[in-house]
Amino acid sequence: MNKFIAQAFKVEHDFWKYLVGSLIVFSAALVGQFPLLGAVVMKVISDGGDVQSINESSMYSILDSNVFLLLALLSFAVGFIGLYLAVKFIHKQKMTAIATSRSKLDWKRIWFAFIFWGILSSGLVLVDYFYLAPEGYVYNFEMQRFIILAIIAIALVPIQTSLEEYLFRGYLMQGFGVATTDKFFPYAFLMSLITIPMFIILNIKYSIDYLQNSLLLLAVIAVGVIVFQIIKKTNGFESKSYNSLRNVCQRNWSPLLITSAIFGLLHIANPEIGKLGYSLLIYYIGTGLFLGIMTLMDEGTELALGFHAANNLFTALLVTSDWTAFQTHSILKDIAEPKLEFIDMVFPVFIMFPIILFIFSKVYKWTNWKEKLFGKIVEPPKEDYKIIG
Image (tube, rainbow, N blue to C red; front, side, top):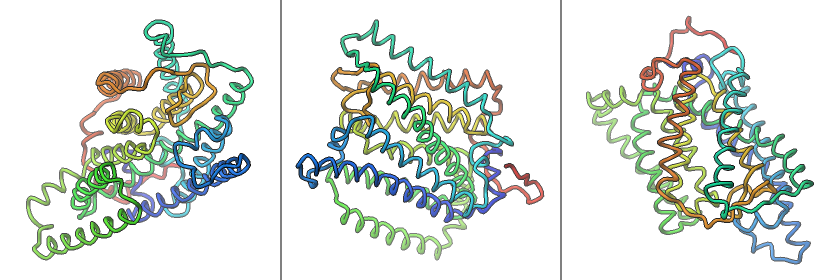
């Protein structure tokens, strides 16, 4: 069994507590957005504009990009506080335990992944700029604004990426991992596989509003409860086929797939999706799988922490565009017409990421892939618990 997931069993691990904890993190991040929203409203009012005209796409251009970046990243810092409170007071757990199976964070791993991907990703951008498509970039460097950007990014981008890794590859990976041992997990898992894509498709096609979404959610819950009761009364949860399904779902691949899907789908509101289309979700979900596999194989989030921080930080400093989530005073500006080609998804997800996993596996001597990625999750005997701080 994967040690990283197994250590969640030694603390308060009822799944409803993970739901409450996630709500706390979400609420804290929402509170953290108040300064940004307040600044945007004040700027619109001071310019004599109409506050009702503010929408998600226009917010990026209302404030200076450095100010916007600073205020936007503050929400992740507040969200991190929410995660800390949830882990400490709801689960009686230490933050280190949702980050690694080791006794403490391995900073050598973090720095290795950070430097490795920082150099490689920056190199790919520079090759594109100097050799492959120089016409798609303009030199955007302004010393004073760049220095301010660098200070903000270096201070806060690692907090943003660390929150996402602690939450998805740590907290929720462990939470969904222990949830797989519940008798009714396969039913909930299948219902999610049906209803979540349905919600997404309906919202994309029909632009359903908040009230309609709420009513649809209540209807789905009602149907789910009715179906659950029918299966329970007919002893469907005791059937041989259901037990076989439970055996399949009670494995490490379940939390890996669930957290990767949630991670990817949460990017659906990014402006990149609006420009390039929903096919880009393949990249985001694929990135979640890549970071999740890295975490399970290394039994800790250190490599994912370093990789994610390098990816966002070097991107923020090196290249920007008018249609990305973070628009910055970076060195270069991408002015090419945004388009998503098949190779843009195939190369990173199906070629580059597997190569990086192979390199990391050789550096850190990963073995027993089948057990770590597909092994069964079983609650260890109490006497086997070892407190990890």
